[in-house]
Length: 266
Image (cartoon, rainbow, N blue to C red; front, side, top):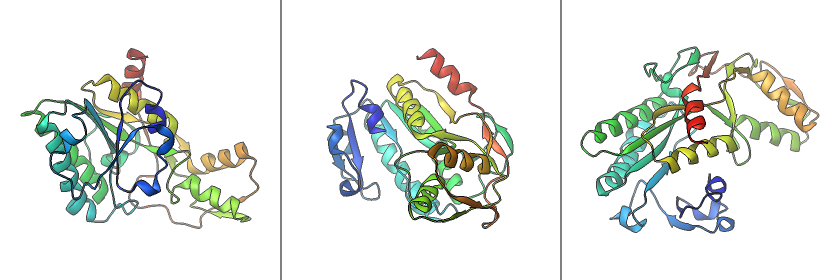
């Protein structure tokens, strides 16, 4: 995200929980050590009264079923954003999740009713609802960027591509995975960053928008493509893991709203 922001003439302040774990020096931006669970007083003024906030913070992942999301993350995240908006923040871009849609299958549209079936998806959806209620008394531009699946550099070691790379670098002959028949929607993280930054800079009241490729692909095909593109020598051990119980077998995003925004703001 910071790499994408550096391409634009914007003054950037990065709120970071742990400055030692993030490579920030090369971006030449202001760093603000920050803990959402224990925020300082007058945060908005301390940040220089920003025009727009890109909000990506969330703890407790990838344990999607943990009540931590509802009991700790949700109130802390809302209190933080609520204070900024009441103090004058006029535009907000928040990362949502496709898990807000729950077990609905097929092509997923923004107009579909959220039906989250895990604590993480429920907490994210509740945060969106709280912010929409806040807009009725303190108007601000809200973009709820509902992320589907991402891949690329900088991902957590638990992500699919990271696990595959680690297995290859370790010299494993096989890579353990599920049966690979799940149909998903994957988008390169650099494109995700580009889209979110464009939305932030526009400062438009976009509402919910799917951030996705719009192209369904099986997990097996996705992994086989990564292996081929990188020239890796490793075999797939299909069926080693059970299919996850918190998501449907086949779903992908409808990106027509995203494409309209990109066309109008290119």
